[in-house]
Length: 179
Image (cartoon, rainbow, N blue to C red; front, side, top):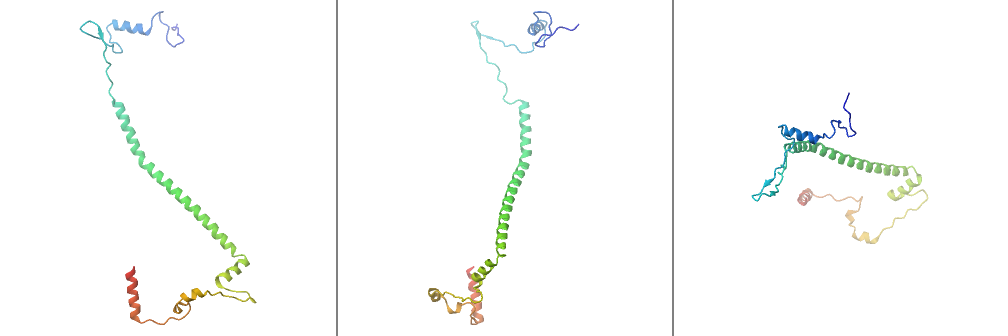
């Protein structure tokens, strides 16, 4: 027959028997106690003095080994994390560049689509090339203030007089000196 168990999970030995009582009984039998017993220092007058408990060491060997393992893991993961963060920054920059390029492509497609409209082509020909439709009279407005500043030699399309070779050489030396 098995011994009866109590709700606390302890076996029900003889009544009144507790683990503490069993430990006291083992001390009497000449065995060493499981935990140290604090001794009281006795003062010269016979009264008991308080003593301080011994302070535990700050760093046990387990704590040192654990901290070394954590330090090694930290150093081992530092470089891959840095590489990962650099790659994430590069990905973000490339995505931003891609969005910018997509916007630029959409804008260029819209500009190219304008050229399918005949009215836009006519307006650009008038504006850029000064072309007119048959039957229209073209007018060019000349500002007299701009003509006073313009040098007759700088008129586009007018032939320029040839310069002597030494003039060309000297102007190239001056241009090189300016840079």
